[in-house]
Image (cartoon, rainbow, N blue to C red):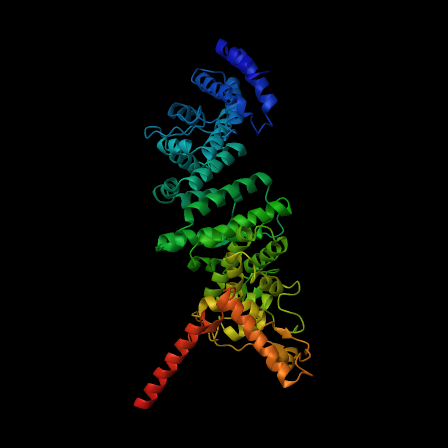
Length: 540
């Protein structure tokens, strides 16, 4: 049926005819996600008419059909003007049960198809329209959602109603900084969402910060996983700046409680590998936001039969994170988005928790035996991470290098030993450590243990490549002194051409503070420091 015919029938206004006509349109366009630009005006008029029809007293079945039509039309981000007016948004908010009013104590319970369809339409409209986002703020939709979230445990709403409540809340907090702040501070969103998370996972507690986790329990159901992931994403939005704020005792207790739940999430499986990977990915993203001081609860659970134990601590969570990192490394897809959060989490945890660092070092940087291959060659975690140290993406490169540097207790010689000077040079240059030494971190002074294989090969290891190199023949063997001098001058001329005349390369030198500078400036600084040192010696 063409749009002109549909509009003509809707203008007749009979409810039965409206319902029948729109049902046909919905069925025909249920899988339509790309729209013809030439019919945009007709679709706009259709949207306006449907909104007008929704203002009338309709049968529930007709309401649902009208709202389905809006959901389909709202997929066209260029044709949303019919739905972003104050009156249209207010009508949709009413049907979604989110019409916030200070006088209304009990919100509409979202248990009808109309509510679900209205929520779906609002998600599309708000996602695609800045005007709708502004209207959502004025209509105080976040307050309506927060009020409904408080009743999360008390209502028997369908999965879809709860899911789209959470999806809409996620979109509002992702798209509007002011809504994010309002939910986090004024509406105590972290506490609200943590309660919803606990309810969805049906948790039992064995101690104040320890969830009972049965590793042999059936995987988390698809519907529960979907809701949990929406909660985790929204919590991520409203906690992204926690590390920049002072955290009082009450907030610290809340974040520890949340971290204990996230530990449980990491130890649970979902229905299928891909969904579990996504579920764990959102969990890791949120853990990165939490204050480091609150992550001690990841290690405090009692060691039980089947647990991974190290130095008397329960390392189940760290082991899962390491396996998660390994899988992400193997996938090699969108490394900045998928890899940097878990690398940052492991790095910062290693800085503050000695047991975590020592466990990770034993797994990632075990005593060195293979000295024949370059550090970046092979399939161990060390090899994979060293390869990333020369990645084209600066963030990925920095995160991988920083993680390994912390595992080496920010000791330059140890870092170079495991990665090779060539791979390590980027981080060392950025830290001013090219001349050696240590970083600023504070670590215990236990010695590095060398294997017999490493001790025997150490004198022959090339520090730049990090492996034993085969002895190469001297290219000047058999040359006369005149030939050697000619080749040397030829090389000097080539360097001069590349640096001074064509400026393709710039010779660099290492200053006394371990940083790279242009060779002339570096040499001048070294000379000035030497002269200053000589003057001080003379005065003594």
